[in-house]
Length: 166
Image (tube, rainbow, N blue to C red; front, side, top):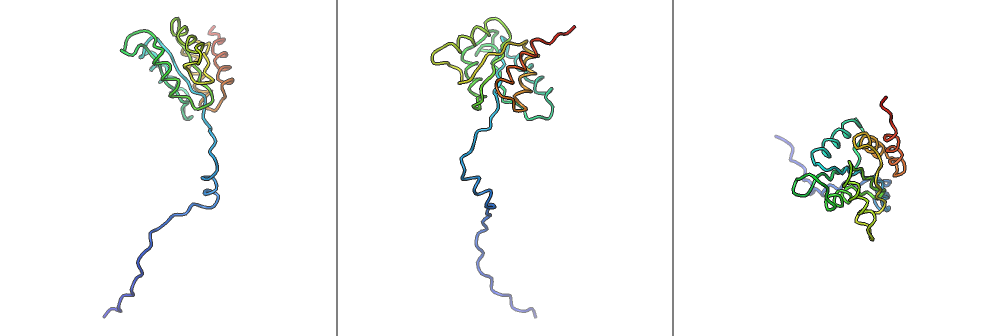
């Protein structure tokens, strides 16, 4: 016959303990390591979304920058919307500034009006970008994705604006 089974003490719940270094890190205040947010403003939602998709695809395996589009009007029409621009800028604000790139005309006027309001409707550190829409979007998205600060993002836009094609 088999030997009698030893009586087992009731099991205590398993508690995973983090190493001391991890415990100390959890208690330390967390610093914000966000990136510059990017907003693409176009008169057309489809154009803004397509440019955002292309810019994202061209940056490769780098973690994408915080990016939002504000294309068209709230009802899906062609135009610009202060409400959509404001919501997009707030959604990508990680505390390091927001670069707002516009396609043309009333998009630029709307963003400048939002920046000029007291208090501004856009997050602190929001800036309008002076660059061509597609080239600028690629440049600023990549620069933000690799951790560039707002000045570096704006400088990348300047480079894109000056890029000669012939």
